[in-house]
Length: 117
Image (cartoon, rainbow, N blue to C red; front, top):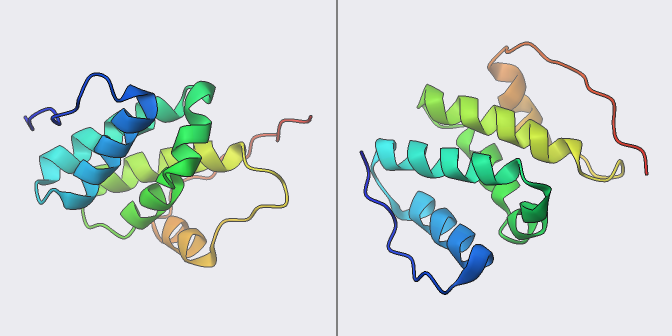
């Protein structure tokens, strides 16, 4: 099991998420990457975190993870990229590289209605 990131308890939610993103980007351990991506995925379920996740460009991190060879990272990335994309404005679109990567895994696609304002 990977060690917990060394995070100052006074940095707040944004600081904690930044530390997770930094750890994901800097670690060489696949186990640590899986744990960090799973933690980020859990944070993505809370709408209160959306502004921080967007600020830290976590969606890009999920999309970049689609090109990993680690199947666990790919599964986390596909699920969370879809969750974050669901809440983007209709005028936003997924970069074509991300769409190609998601299609290449041939996972079943589930369409959900967009939220209306």
